[in-house]
Image (cartoon, rainbow, N blue to C red):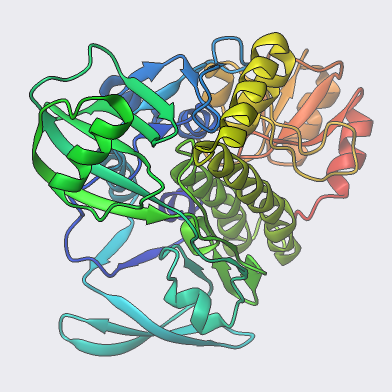
Length: 448
């Protein structure tokens, strides 16, 4: 979020309550759409260099895998990439753009009026107040910003719990392993540092100790893989909540502050980054004056439905993961057979899990659609500004680009239209078969 604001000419300040970055990586997966988001700012290569491409995924730990290789993206895979390194790369990108980060500074409250937002902050040198034009709460499921802004967080509490351990294995499986039976669910995958993540679900909801992890693995997989030397043991629940409002006045929510859910399919970090991409360029555009404030009204109606869908499919996956009864096992076999015999259903699920199917509301038939772009086309959005893409750069389109202060690129389009105005986040904003049609469509947008 901060990098997007700085790229757009804003002056963002990050208040980070943690004095140091956590050495543990909750998230390990970067999905295709997130890699596209990174590519739109020319940041994807470092992630690709440090990650492991995985050409498929799962839905609810069903044995029938979701094949990503045929998806309409230049990155048809999940990237296994530890969150620790993801945070380091995102921070480096922000710092290069001039973002100021204050570590050990915790927001304790806020007030807002028509002119700005005043934050109460506790820092290493005591408490102080700071005023900003806008505030984005990206401060996790227990968000202080959300609570201080008076935004409701309705949903359900945890009824089942998963377990997690980052450990060393004396007898690891030959390849990443998945087990599911009447005793529970288990995943064993390698992570950096020669360790393995042992995670899953057991009806007994074991406490996070080394011995309980051994016993649980042995019950489910028949072996404990000689696990030892844990560096992190934890558990997590299926509490699912969604902010009633993603925006209240000058305060916005993004990431886990806006939505929490069971970590099924590794989607959480990805949806949070996509929230930031959607909001960041809009805030920058309004603050720098090339868009009017009405643009900010689009954040909630565009991202809240994504949060609704996130809660729905992670709850569905939770039901499948925790389906250890006879009836549950039958449901899992039925669903696995359905995915094997109906590839179109499996592809639709793959597009849902990877967020490649997200489309935003719009009046034009193409408005809000994600551009199934090439890597080169994604790089055309590096400046964080809208761009005109045209099958042929006609004189009329060149004149339109000049008058609207837009960069025009001649490139092949996947849609039967002469030209399209692309938003900085890779979704179509307006389109037309002629320069006149496109100009009329642009005139309806909240541009200054």
